[in-house]
Amino acid sequence: MKPLILTALAALSFAGSAALAQPAAHASAPPAPACRELDASAPEWQAIGSQYARLARAMRARDFDAMVALYAPAFEVRESQGQGGGGAATREQSIALQRNRMAAVRETQLISNTILKLVSCGDRATATVLQQWYRTVRVGDRDRLAETAAVQDEEWLRTPGGWLRGNIANVHPGAWLLDGKRLEPGQPYREDAPPFEPFAAAPAVTVGPDVAPHECRPAVENSPLWATIGHNYHLMGEALRRRDEAALLSFYAPSIETRLPNGAVWNRDRAMAYARAGIAQVRETRLTSNVIVSLQDCGNRAVATVLQQWYRTQMFQGQVSRLETAAVQDEEWRATADGWKWAGASNVHSGAWMIDGRRLHLSGPDDQRSPGYEPYADPE
Image (cartoon, rainbow, N blue to C red; front, side, top):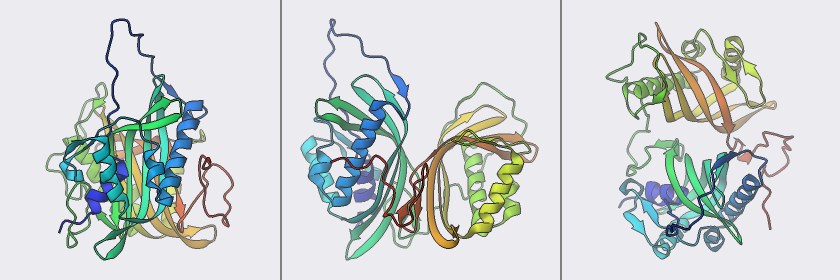
């Protein structure tokens, strides 16, 4: 029997791909409003953030009706065969399908949709989010811990009753774990399969150091450049697992510039000191993953937007703790005579950070006695 891990969970995690009904075009119709990117202080950002809080509350309570109340009035769910779907479905079919899938979830430990970017087009908005979902699910006669993360675009529609969730597109799965074992997204689950290790094998074709600079353009997924940098991320992850400082730092470029969200800028010495301190504090790395979401090819340099996940046991505030962090950020790579080297990070957007099962407050004081930080305090 094919388990429900990657079908019942993955598709539910991403809520399918819903398409809002489009009004018919008329010659007298007013022009569509211009789209503009908003910042976190915008009323639309705050309102949609509050809707994500409502969605999280409904999922934790396993209140399916409250979840459905946040969906747009008309949508079609489209799922690939790899996600366990069979194409488009009506609203009624979609709701029935998701209700059955939600029934497999015993408990949600974390559900987070961190807004990375929000583009407003009048009464429609598109939120690019980092979604993280940790939950206990029933598979056969066993309860299993599933942990997934993804970067995806979610459309929201303004209605008299508030913003409602619409289509979900451009889904980029990060590392997915089942009882701590990494799975390959979109593939049938096999209990005897080894843990998934993307880009573990050296690429058959690599991009050498003698490439000439050119205007930046999107790289094709699994192109030689994508494979080369993907393999470098794998090797850096292996070095981090082994706590091999020399191997990790061998991937650092001669010149590094990292820009932090608070405006601070780190040079190579500061970045290397941070890496050394991290290795010294970490007792064990359970997962390190840098999934490339997009890649800009600029000839002798490249910029990778990555979903970074790092799950480890380390010293934190004076005691050994389990820490799970996730972020989406841009990372620059440069071609050198010694291969492609990591040259820094920018546009860092932190997702939910968990310590011993409790969510940390990253932008304010953290109370260790609290049950965990909840952004956009759940509205009534």
